Length: 177
Image (tube, rainbow, N blue to C red):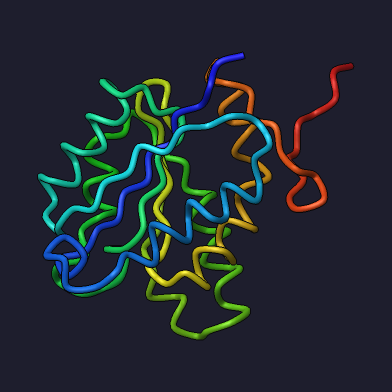
């Protein structure tokens, strides 16, 4: 069985400058460790809020490092430096708008400002790229909402088979007829 490579990208000028501990990237790793029972390898980067740097990092993870899933955190709000969705759209062959729609819907159950989020998702070659918010609590809420569809999406792209601890998260895979 092929070990899945999963890219984790924290987008933050403060984190890349070493000003604070990257709690968001670690939160993604912790959640994925809870979800996944199959072997996986994190490919982890902390980068600044610069569209060209974000785009180059996503391209490298998809095309050179062969990450079947790339999850970003940060840079999805309305601030001028929040450009993660633009970088994602720039590098993707096809967009997957349902991910962002579901994450915003789920987040609205907790905070009215979730409508300000611009999270998106898309496909680049054999990689699924998903933008998450920057707060660890929100990361968990959003991943709980969208992750059940992620293993099947990766199956459809001929990626590695992601096995999950179904007592924690139950992936949806249609039954063959």
